[in-house]
Structures are given as structure tokens and as C-alpha cells.
Length: 230
Image (cartoon, helix red, strand yellow):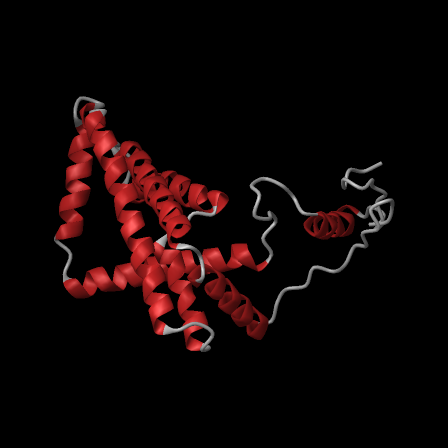
């Protein structure tokens, strides 16, 4: 991208596996070095966000006469609200932070740093989720729909506590692997910097490159110093 800003568009190539691993390690090092207060605050937010997603999914699944698969699909789509909030806000969720093990495996962080992060994040997630559950209880959401929301919540809870140890571990591992993978994809070429909702010039250049290839637009788009097209 030429112009007063002097930015030049470049190619946006997929990273090979080795680069993906190094990126995951770098992310793990950054997370492991976060101040405890910041880490705990972001973990509380993540727990609250996931709890809100779960409350939304429970409401959607309540009183449905649709086939089981359709109901679960709709509930799953509703639950993604929590994951979207976690990703957009940059909150710290324990399942995603399992990815830090890459940094430990490469020797860039120690075991204590790994356990410190996991402990703080797990505790923060619990506080955020428990606090949200208390607010939902105080708001008497369980009475909605003639009590059907509360009945659904109890049914879900009963099903979870009745899982065998091996089954619970297997299902948790699948969930952690999926979310850690989604988190890694997001951080590989994150479109936002540390200040929320502010697009960086380098990301703008990459995005314009993609659009120019897709729409056969000129590869060079003049813009001013703020990154706005002129």
C-alpha cells in the first residue's frame, strides 16, 4: 500500500508447522509472564463469559420439541456466545491456556511458571462462573418458561455429574483441544493489537492484499498516515 503512510502490501502466507509451533511457544511465554492481578482479572471475565454462554444455551434448549440433534445444534450455536466474548475481549480461559504446554515442552518457561498460570486462570474462571451463576439464581432465570429453564439446567447438571471418570476426562480433553486449536488460529495472525478494536497498519495491508486478489483490485491503494484510503 503506497501513499503518505509508506506501507507496502505483502503476501499473507500460511505458516508451516514449525512456525506454528514457534508462535504457540511465544504466546505461551507471554501468558506465563503476565502479572498475577491482570491474569486473574482476565480469567474472571472468561469464566463469566462462558457462564453467560451456558445460560444462553440452556435457555435455547429449554422446552424444545425439535429432534435431539437439532436442539443440541442450536444450543451449541448459542453457547458460542461465550467463546466469542472470550476471544474478542482477550480473556484468559483455562482450556485455551493448555496451549502454554508448548512453551514448557520447548524449555522456554519452567514448570512453576506453567503451574502458576494454570492455577490463577483456573481459580479466576471458577470465580467468574460461580459469580455469574449466583446472579442468574438471584435473577430467578430458572423460573422462566414456567420453570422449564430450571428443569433443563438441572437435567444438564445431573447428566454431567453422572459421567464416569474416564468419560469425563475424554470429553474434557476433546473440549480443551478444540478451544486451544481455535485460540492458536486466532493468535497466528491476530487482527487487533493490545488496544481493543484498533486495527494495526500491518493487518490493514494484509487485508487489502487479500481483497485485491479476490476482487481483482489494484494491489496498491493510496492512503494517508492514519491508514484511511485517500
